[in-house]
Each structure stands twice: as C-alpha cells, then as structure tokens.
Image (cartoon, rainbow, N blue to C red):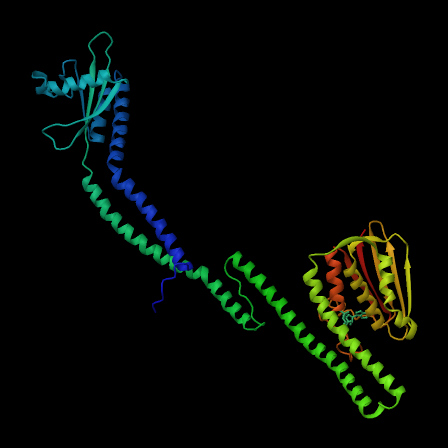
Amino acid sequence: MISKLDKKSLNFKLWLYFISFAAAIMALLWLLQIVFLNSYYESMKIKEISRIGNELAAKYGSLDFENALVETSFNEGISINILDQTGKLVYPLDLFDILRQPRLNSETFSDFLARLYGSETDYVVYTRTDDRVRNPILVYGAILRNGDSPNYFLFINSMLEPIDSTVNVLKSQLIRITGISFLLSLGISLILAKWISRPITNITRSARALSKGDYTVSFEKGAYTEIDNLADTLNSMTRELSKTEELRKDLMANVTHDLKTPLTVIRSYSEMIRDISGESKEKREAHLATIIQESEKLSSLVDDMLELSRVQSGLRDMEMEALDLTELSREVLDRFKYFQENEGYTFQLTSNGDTIVFGDKRKLSQAVYNLIGNAVNYTDDDRRIGIKVEGEEDSVRFSIEDHGPGIAADEIDHIWDRYYRGGKSHSRRKTGSGIGLSLVKSIIMAHNGEYGVMSEEGEGSTFYFRLRK
Ligand code: ADP
C-alpha cells in the first residue's frame, strides 16, 4: 500500500526527529574520530611522554634510577638515552661503546639543546624527523643537573605511529554504524509512532462514531497519562451528550404532548362553539374562556422556552442594581392576583425588612415568578403558599413553601435539570416544560448565589435561594 507522504503525520515527524538525532550523533562521531583523531592522538602521546620523562627525571640521582630507565624503555617501547654536554651517549652503553662512545648527530643535538634551553619549563617535548625513519619522532628532553659538574640530558624518543590505517578502519566502521543507526532510527520511529498514535487513532475512531450519534461509544485509555486524560474528558463529554440527547427526546415528547393537549382542547371547543353553543351566550362564553385559558398555557410554554435560551445567552450582560427583594417579590406576587381572587389561593409574604441585594431585576423577577408558579401548580387542594424574604448577616434568603405532594428523593437532584419533569411514573397532572427550575438555577448561579429545595413527599416543598447583600 503506497500512501502519499503526509509531512504533518506523527509517523513522519517522529521519523524526521529520529533521523536528525542520529545524524547529529553521527556527525559528532565523525568529527571526533576522523577529523580530530590525529591531533587527539598526538596530544595524548605528548602527555604520555611528558609524564614518563618527568617521572624519570625526578628519579635521577636515586639508586634505582638505572633500573627505572631499563624498565620504562622496555615496558613503554621507547628509546631512552642519557647524553652528556657534548652529545655523547652516556646511557645505555654496551661494552664496545665505551671504546668509541657514540655521539648524537651534531645538528640534532644542537637543535635539542636550543629547544631545551629555550623552554620555559625544565623539559621540552617536540617532534623531529629523521631521514632513516619514515614517521615523525616525538622527542622528550630534560636537564639532569649534577651540581657543579657538567649536566647530563635525558633524551627520550618515541615513534609517532601513522594513524591513517586506523582512520581507515574507523571510517569503514563508521560508515556501517551510520547505516545501521539510520535503519534503526527508521525502525524505532515507526514502532514508536505506531505505539503513540494507536490510542489516538482509537479515540478518533470512537469520536467518529460519536459524531454519527452513537452515544454508547467509550473512549479507550492509552499507555500514557495525556491520552488517559483525553479519554476521560471525552467519556464524560459523551455522558453529558447522551444526557442532553435523552433530555431532548424527553422534551420532544413532553412539549409535543403539552402543545398538543391545549391545541386539541382549543380545536374541540372552537368546533363546539361553531356547531352547538354559538347561539347560547352563556355556553359560548364558558367555551371561549376555556379556549383563552388554553391559549395562555400555550403561550406561556413558548415563553418559557424562549426565555430559557434568552437567559442562557444573556447571562453575560446583566444589568446589576441594588434592589429590595421583598419589593420585587410583592410585585411578582401581584401577577398571581387572579389565583387569589378566583381560585382560592392564599399567599402570605413575610419579610424582616433588611433585604436589599445587588442583582438584575428582570432576571430575579423571572426566578421568583417561576418559583411561585411552581408552588401554585403543585400545591394541590391546600392552596396556601408562604413566601419569606429574610435578611441574614451578609445575604438575603428567599424561600417559598407549599403543602403539595413534595418531591421524591430520587428526583430531587434532577428537578433543576433542563427539560426535567418530575412524576414520570404517575400521570402528569400539570402542563409544564421542565424549564422553570433550570431557569431559576441559571439565574441564581449568574448572581453567584445558592439555591436548593427541602421537600418531603406528601408534606410539601420549600424552595429557596440566597443572594449576597
Ligand atoms: P415544570 O414545572 O414545567 O415541569 P420545572 O423545571 O419548573 O418544570 O420543575 C421541574 C420538576 O420539579 C417538575 O416537573 C416537578 O416534578 C418538580 N417540582 C417543581 N416545583 C415543585 C413543587 N413546588 N412541588 C413539587 N414538585 C415540584
């Protein structure tokens, strides 16, 4: 399979990094081994011969000096000579040499002396060439002082082996190493890329399934933390999405049901007026009243839905002002006068007066309205609703109590969710969109307030929120 080279892919990038890394290491090796080997070798040799020479020179005068000379020259494979002031060999001498003491070539000797006396230290190291040998010779020289008598000189010669052949061996080795390391980095980068990208590929696959609406997918964790975190995040996102999806389906079912019921009522009452009650003023009025009531339900349902999206998109630009929560509650309560006058509800509003908060009046009114609306909706036959606005130390608490059916313990956490409507197992008594409380929640949260409910099934509920003063 030949796929087009993707220069942005993990595979390619890793391969590139590995190759560059290998190339850098190789370049360093080549540089050190081939280019600098010669000077490196030479400086090593110079160090070595200086050390040996200095050690020997230090032993001059001691009893084992001659022994040391012999040992060193054998062990290190170097030629060690002692010369006198005229360049004559003093050591080593064999029997015949005593008769005709050999002497260093005068040119070499004077060069040696010049360098030795020119040196700032007690010794000198330099290279010289000799016509009789092919390679340059490394020379060490030191003065062996004899007090008042003429001095002797330590004269050590060591061959500087040519390293060309070594370099050639190294070169061919390095060529192989370079090839192998390039192949290795190719292989490792491929394996590594596979290893790193596999979890990503898996996640991509799951994400694709998710985007097609499969909320059952789960994102696999990988061998490293970053992928684990990503998978966790995506998994929780999927859970949220599927919750939203469920809520959406619920909403569709609820809303279509809630839209349809009033519409059916409106339609059948209209037909009744047309066919039957049109002539009788009394009946007609009654039927028209029902139609009006149902259309009001419809419009409040639509209002709720519009308000929700508006509040949620508009929470960022709130118009904050100082306002009296008691005053605001009274104003909102006024809108429920109808229920008080016609349906036998009693509303009792108590306040301790110290109830000024800082907030968006319109939005807080909406929250209070929704809470009162719910109490009215869910209070059953009792129809007594108590509202308290209490100033506390640095906050104001609004609470509303009804004596309705209360909320089941397993539902109490969900009622603040958008589109959630309680009492699913029972037949639903009231129309509603499941939006009211989620609006309250959004509004109070936008004010950095607290909210909650205390409720016991069969006893009633108390909803509350608390805002900072
Ligand atoms: P809706 O009232 O339109 O169904 P809400 O978001 O206002 O939507 O309320 C969500 C659910 O919380 C309701 O369906 C109901 O089960 C429960 N609930 C809200 N207020 C009360 C209350 N005062 N008493 C009992 N249950 C309530």
